[in-house]
Image (cartoon, rainbow, N blue to C red; front, side):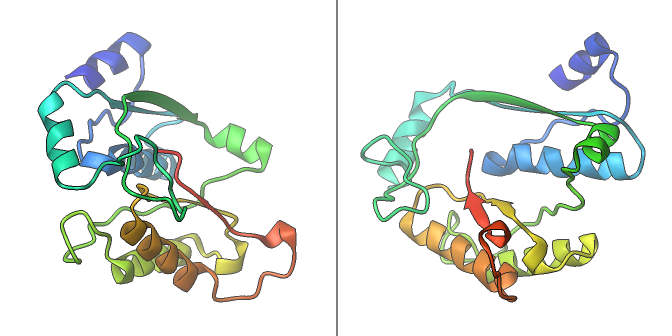
Amino acid sequence: LLVGRLSYTLGLQGPSIPYDTACSSSLSALHAALSALQRHETDPALVLGVNVMCDSQMSRVFAASGMTSLSGKSYTFDARADGYARGEACCCAVHELQREKASGVRCVAGGVRQDGRSASLTAPNGRAQQLLLRAVLDDAAVASAQVRLVESAANGSAMGDSIEAGAVAAALLTQPRTSQSDALVIGSVK
C-alpha cells in the first residue's frame, strides 16, 4: 500500500496505517496519531488525508439521494444548508510533542466512535455524539468550559448540522462562559 511506501521513502517509523471510513478517515487517522504520540510509539506523527473522486456514478447517486447541495456550495451551520459539495482534496499535518509543548497549543485527547442507529444512514446520532464528547473530556481531564474549538463532522445538511450543534451544546456548554476569550468556536474545515 501507499502508506508503507511513503513511510519507507520518508524514513518514518511507528504505525503506518491507511484508514477508509468515508467522511471520517482523516479524523480517524489524526486520533490514531495522537494515541501513538501519547504512547511514545512515534514523534513526530504525519497525518495525511486524500480524497479523489474516480467514479462519477457516485456523484449521481449522492445527488439522487439528496445528499449534495443543489447550489454546489456547502453552507455548514447556515440556514441555507442544503447538502454538501463534493470535492477532491489533499491535506497533511505534522504533530510533534516538543513543538506542541513549546507553542502552548496542544491536543490532549481525541475520540472516534460509530454513532450506531439514527434517523438514517447519513444522519448523526446526537446522543452518541454527546457521549463521545463527554468521554473525551474525561480522558483529557478537562472541564467543558476550557474547550475553545470543536472541529465537527458537519456536512451542510440542515438536519445533520443542527443535531451535531445540539450535541456540542449539550456536552460543552454546561458551564457559563463569561468572556469572549471563553467563547466556543465550532467549525467544519472538511
